[in-house]
Image (cartoon, rainbow, N blue to C red; front, side):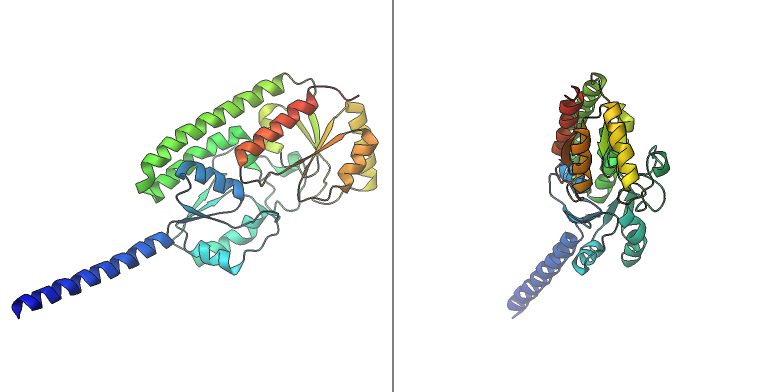
Length: 297
């Protein structure tokens, strides 16, 4: 009897251990989540973690980062997150981030805008969606990304120490790719005879500042331009021989088409919210090189 009793105890303890172990693994798995505001942030995290961490993106593709409201499922995923990576000044974050952190008080917040040389919107445009007056598009300049990536790496190492080797290795590789992109952009811009471009919504402010370009926004005060402003802009584009208008995929293209027809300017659609940030930046800089390297006919 003693032998059978001992066996029973061992079986019982083993069952309890395995059950608790499964629960712990399940709990750990649900906490292996990071929440971010936009898709490019997921790209940066995936590059460092090798895609081994679930990333909950709060603003989905095609949605505006100024006005989007999260769904119940997104809130549930966020409540399981150990870390929230914020861009810092998106309209969505200004409206929702405080409320979101109240739902998950143990979640660590990383603000990628901290310690950066930020651009005040009034210096370039007055966009009503930027509630605190700061241009939020910090991810659209490789030089700015190179500044916040070290802080992102440290936060990921602290949150997921078991991924240290993966993160360290991937970080070196990504930073090397980033350096190549930045150097190539510096070189191509230095050789361009034209440095000015038009853009509907001014998403390339940091890119223009960091690489010596001039961005001229069609959108004014976060609104559609007036007929008088459009007329002035068309004349300026003709006078300055500006060859290209950039417009984000989610925006109405009609005003850009009007300016394009009247001033003989090419229209290029871009996607600052694209997941594959590296490829999109290569595409944008390639477009700048193609359009600004020669004068219009």
